[in-house]
Length: 57
Image 1 (cartoon, rainbow, N blue to C red):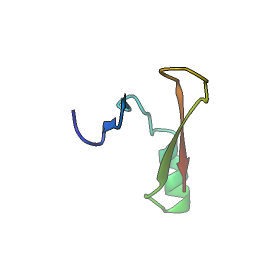
Image 2 (spheres, helix red, strand yellow):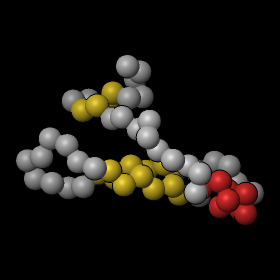
Image 3 (cartoon, one colour):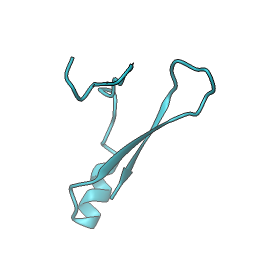
Image 4 (tube, helix red, strand yellow):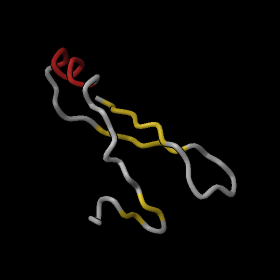
C-alpha cells in the first residue's frame, strides 16, 4: 500500500477511475493538467461511501 492510497483511518482505492471521457476535453482546451476532487457522500455514522470524482480544468 502506498502513501497515496492511505490517508488517516480510511483506505482510498481509486484504481477504477476512467479518464477516457476527459481526453477529448483536454485536447479541445489544449490542457493536460487538472485538479481531481473526490467527493464522498455525507452519510451520518457511515463507515464507507461511494465517491463522485470530479476533474476541474
